[in-house]
Length: 468
Image (tube, rainbow, N blue to C red):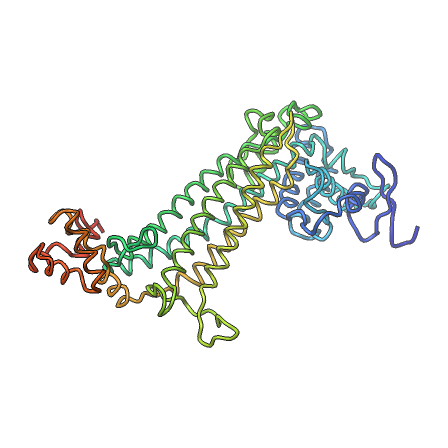
């Protein structure tokens, strides 16, 4: 064996590992056995496992099943893992055992080898800290890995929410600038009755506020953890009170209400909280998709489309057509939200993958939830910075489209009847004249009364001005 490698052993025997790596035999076997696709296990899950291993070492020491010296070495090694020092030593992909065993052991091995160094020993055979006996003490992949996914998912929601709140604020600020601008509404992409620009944009903000509330509520569902359940939920191999002690440390470090699940069998055999979170993320994705589609319709043109909104010119829009500005932010977010909805479908299917005491889609669940939350966070930030804050309104064009609309005739229906109002609209359209001229030509109303009844601003506020 060359000096650049060392022997690591597991229950199946010795494995050669390059000397520079901190992982051990099981990780090396997994590198060979699970070379499936380019997707790496998210570092958020690895770091969450590091937090749990640190809390577990402290809990084990408190309960007298781990000596204080080894506990100290493990805690120090975990702190280095959490600082990102060993990120390159977690090479495994997502597509591995459905329990996440290979990643759990990867973390155990790296921590054990580093803790052994801190204790004056060596990596490999002569290490004083064992990955199973000490780092994984009182644990199983089956309770630790899903707990790590919950921790990482909770962090991802906390990182998403500020970006979402800032986008909502930006939309509300824009809406407040245009409270007095009355435009024509559209249903079925055809002219409808008037509303204000603020009402339209306020609807977008309200849709996102609802999604924000649902995402905040999802945090409560993530907080029950299966720690202490070990292999199937009974807690075999863990001392009484271990899970509670680990959660106590996690709560203190994060400020989140992590606690042992009332029924660990339920949260180990299924992962409904993760499916629920992904559903809520999917709702936000649908809301963003709807909003960007609305914006690119309203900004279409600028002269041969709706042309009501003016997009910020972030970059040239065409390699051949000079001066073109395209709704690129809308397109980027639309693609990202479609991706998220696909991830949501995968998570829903994975949530059905519980058989008896275990769901065997844990890495997929963690990977898709975390990637979706990160995409949503970036979408919210990018939309705010590169689209909403620079959005402008062509007020003159908005007014012209409103005043030309045939559906202002809706205000006449209570006055002259539906059928007569319909004749006015059809006559105006057939002869390409305004509603007022058509109504006067047909003799269904006086000019004075028409001007009183057909008032776009009043139509947008049929019950009076909203409170400010």
